[in-house]
Image (cartoon, rainbow, N blue to C red; front, side, top):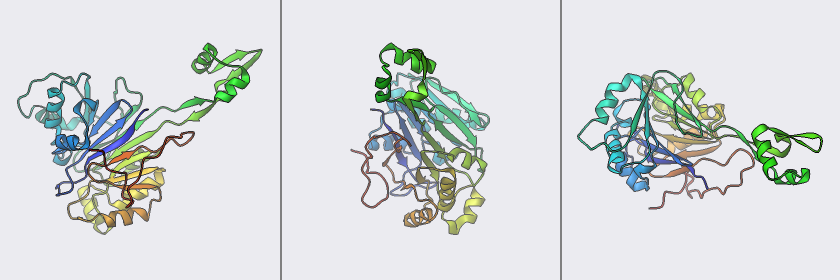
Length: 327
């Protein structure tokens, strides 16, 4: 059974706290593992969360502020230490090339794995060899160049066995129908639409350090799961604007306008030891599945919008999100 979930490795913004590590998020998507914004301590958080370096297939850095990238040297060296057998693609803003190279070569190590740099020059589709999804980058608004990421699964269809049986369709004929979209049967044309229902592709979006801009809404549009920064509360909106960040209320309003299903708020300023206000503020504007992220929790991608009967993972009794990972 395929597994799609976001493993939260860290939730702090610029300054970590006793309970919040610097950023780090691993999206498990079937056989892929996309590691977003590995800050300091990511390698140890991976250990705590039961995530291996071998599971990483792609690394995506939004921008080169330290809390989003200083874990890169350790992660890259661990990929090589563990002799990860597959290539790992690394996405990052092209204007930060010098920082990427410094981090990649921060200390001496024996290179055994293939890391493929993929600098981003502008918004648009990214090269994602071998992926069963498309990956896009969208420019955001921050004091340094920053990009958000969107993963989109192509839509498909699900065959209806009852309709196939009623028409006497089976074996190789079904394969031809799926491939060609129509088939001749007993003097009439049977189309794929007649014997199937739509299976909408799922979408994940990742929005870190940015003030409100068109890119935020573009990334969030139609997302099944949106991981987005909520560095400040609305009472500190002037700080959010000055420093290029979002408030919990802004993130929640964007999610509602974009039709997001599960909203994950993260990247919290150290000025807020208690995140109860973030929850209350966001809830005023968003009535879907809302998670105030905590280090080491796993957030499942919600079931498909139609014709999905997958069991829903258990929730925490306090309503703060999914149950923590098994240790």
